[in-house]
Amino acid sequence: MSKKDKKSRILIGDRLLGTLLYTRDKKNRGYLKFSIKNKIINFVKSTDVPTKLPVVLKLNKPTSLEISYKFKDRLLGIKRMVDGKFEREFYKVIIPIESCLFILRVKDYSFYDKYIKNKDVLVLNPPSINNKSVAIIFSFLGKNGAPFSHPDYNCGMMGMIDLPEIELNKLCIGIAEDMQDFGHQDIQVLFPIFHK
Image 1 (cartoon, rainbow, N blue to C red):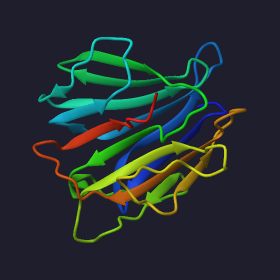
Image 2: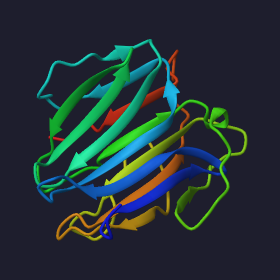
Image 3: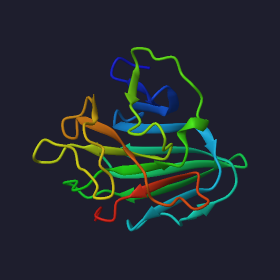
């Protein structure tokens, strides 16, 4: 990693959800990459954002999942590996951003591996000890200097990560209890309906 790279592991309590990396490509363009540690079965994506590539909305095979945001291109991406093959989808994000970037719904975080906390972690404290279903909200700051919320989730205070970008230089991450029905889904990525 270069000096400008920033890496942080995201924990739900003492459970490792995934790794957030800020880095630059070969043309020195910054991008964020969030990789979920565990392979996922019953992955579902929900969005009203037009995609640049064909979309497969439901996937029942185990898959790795990576969500990225390219600052200069203003592209939000999902990359999955299924049966050794990569599948990618990209979504254009309109500036100024007027909603949280994405929401990750996790049906039961207790299945994730325990992780020893160190200096490079962001710990999200679960709002309930009884309900293991949570929503993780990822948001940049709005014009008022506060992160965007979502009407379905109350995450209160959010952790903040500084990024070496001129605009969108702070990423906020929060956690909320998820009381909504998951059906057979283990994990779901939401691109808010008010992303237009």
